[in-house]
Image (cartoon, rainbow, N blue to C red):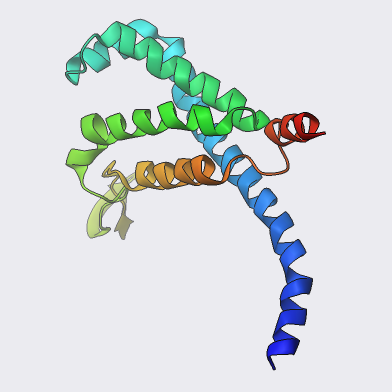
Length: 172
């Protein structure tokens, strides 16, 4: 039985090692996509971003707005390429921790609150009933991003990355 199991393991291991790189690529792409819209919103109106940071009590709001936006843009580019992924994940982790402390933490864990049933509402003059979902804006997604960033810090970019090709060239 043990011999049979070892044969299966020897056959499966190369497949799962390749899947690891595909999974890391997926994690990097999801993170890059996630950081893209907030980065563009910050850069789209930096004065408003700085005002929002000031409202939340973040010290040096203009400087921190530029730092957060720059970190997110760098993260989008570097994670997409798989270049210096471990390095850029560290300031992105800091950004996510600050997001929990300043924005999402006081809203609880869930992004979406419990659904409410309603029976006496009107849409376009007609009575309707159903379920209403309220956004709670909790730290659920941010915590997921933190875990994904920790995966990149721990495992790197994988074989489908510029980092891998640079390392391969340096080792040759």
